Amino acid sequence: MPERWTVGRRYRFEARCRPVVRVSNAEARGLPRECDVFRVAVHGVPKEKPIDRSEVYRKWLCEEFCRRGGAEPADVRMRRFRLEKVFRRRKNAEGRTEKRATITGPDVTFVGTLAITDSDKFTALLARGLGRHRAFGFGMLLLAPGG
Image 1 (cartoon, rainbow, N blue to C red):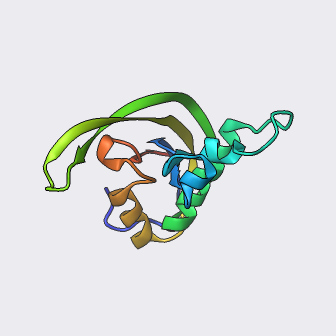
Image 2: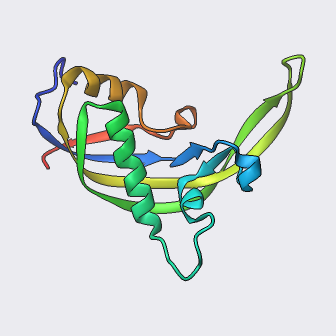
Image 3: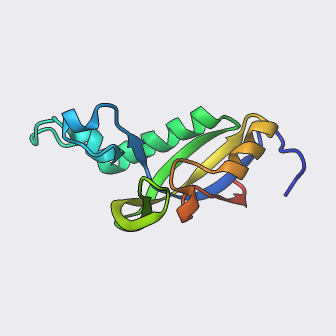
């Protein structure tokens, strides 16, 4: 890993992410508090108006890059998609683990290229990862030279 990233340098990347968002007043909208971004995008939209899942996820990834800074993605595409279950422990009022909750959500692998825009922010982006569920192995950027 370089100590400083060269601004303008391009890399190919792969990232396995869980594109979800937290939904405000979710209960009133009939959605879970944390929801697949595609499900949010199609919520309330007539079935006659199809929405492209890969485009919704690509937009989410580009917004994540923009929010974190450090790199600008290009040529992003969805390589793989499936719905996966993760298990999350729930705690009771005393703070003891009570039960496990199963949460089903998207498991998406993105590929594309990126250009470094800020060395320090890109280092922070690599250390943090993209999106939520990083503790479950999502959000890590894998880099390769070229692009």
